Image (tube, rainbow, N blue to C red; front, top):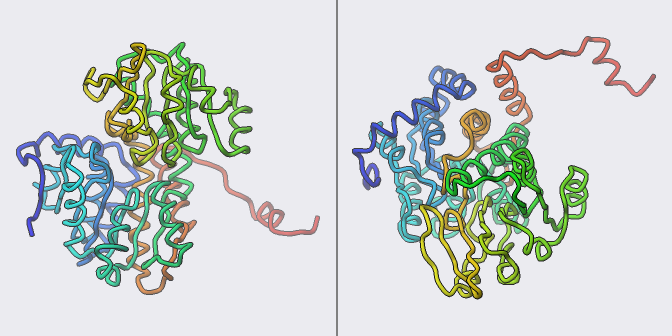
Length: 416
């Protein structure tokens, strides 16, 4: 088996500069790295990662390796891998199997190469490694102590496996940790989605009507940043509670078919398929821009869009123009894949510092508790969440209050 499969190893110096930059801005992960170097919690353990392969992920891989692990890495999205970063990891001795814009078969082969290393712990983003370990590589599952899942989509897939009593090893829902979804999903997604859209289109956001489809934590962040940029924001939801919340947060709330005729920019962030489809495309105005911020490229129905299009061309890098009847143009960003990664660098470094700290400590928890956990989906232990929060506060130079003994007693009694 090859030690690495990358596009161009000569790109390694440029990738190393990116990794070194994020390292300087990830104080929480740096503190954990020092601990890992001292304690070697992964000594002799094979760890597999399938996460969006850019500089911040690369540094997480190096932190895991600093703990003694043998690390193998691939991407979790065909358009999010950065070839120079992959080359830098390969040059440093980490097993890397990934390149930008692979074919479907190449993408699958890269995942299988990572599993060929025989991992004991898996770190997944979207559930592709876990799916393979429950299908074509099922025989390997018995040797997996467990793993961690980064994103909402992956956790949803794990819940389905658990519900059907088919989960073959324990998994930690990293996405559901407070220090992940409250910051990564909201502030990280909110900022990186707009960074990707603005750098790709070079168009102003202020004064435009933005339609956000889905008002979970990621949708909240996207809508909040759109409002801050001066856009009029419409939210579309299927959950009545979230719809009321969006209304009380100051946004217009309506059905997606109503919003289709009004929006200038549409952003899907639901984790579901066919959120924007033929009935929406037929109503959209000339110049409408479509972007997806959900994990998989199924939220915008490309088949419907292609069928409606009389002509298709590349209008600009990462922008596909579809010309519909009547001369209306609809523009698709990043091929309908995660716009913040397909057309950007992903979440800000300081945000991923917290998320990847949760990942690193959760991976250690899985390894240290190997054999003592049931084959089910677990929440991240509270002490891990709290530890990351304290480390983050320390890095920011922030101190907070603590309860006195009298206050502790007051809060823990039922008597007046």
